Image (cartoon, rainbow, N blue to C red; front, side, top):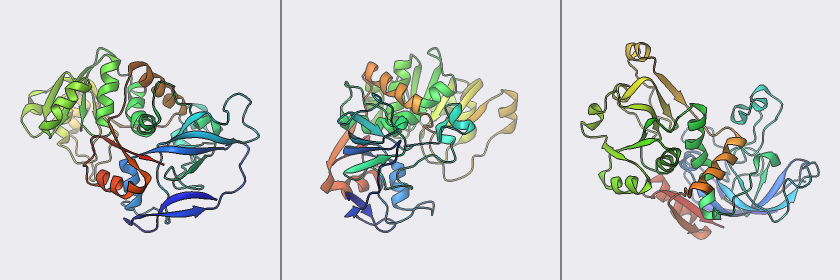
Length: 336
């Protein structure tokens, strides 16, 4: 049995419950959780915003802890009991489909999401990963409380830099300075890009400068209009409707607008602008275990860390509400 912290109904409070475990599979790994980040998508599931959550629900997909058991088919020396590791949003995949064979594990139709499959997520004393290859070691330089948010938030904003060929000479804008955006600024600054932060909150300008941004634009002013043709790449981290035509206009020819947030409404785009300047509008998720490992190494080397507030497990409901109401600067972490 595993002690978990479950939500029994949509939007309900967290309650402790015992979860029965099954025998460990040959490729599986059990991890005793010490810290787990709280992602905005955890709130989406807990509140059942899209209508597919199954209750009771044990959320949490930014888990960090130590290995307690490994399956019999895990190659010797790859993982060891007592090793500090992470378990993210994707904890296993088939490694046989066209997507896995090309390193795009997030597209695997049989990927293991520990929150919606198996025993549940990282808001528990223990989490089980479906495949050891999806369990990265945490670099020694990164503390456990900082590592959690990197597993989802960090990987989500790091992956597009590789996928869409962002170069150190590029001029890049980050839209939204929250849990994802404040990490994106750090990665892009370390990447060598000229970074512009875009936010409606003027009080965040000082934070963006400290994190490495070279310029700040207040999205509620006319500054965005003045940035016409300025950026090679725009990374939007917000789940809100935006003035899409203004953002496309801010791109240079053949520029890329990449969204890692999920706006509530469909995008409305100027098709003439899109075609005549050969612009691209794309989405991205953290889909590769290899990229996650690269991200952790890059973050360790460049001292990139999330700004966090740590909550003991008995304040989990408070942490969830803080994230729900956007009162966290910038990531909440549960200490179990």
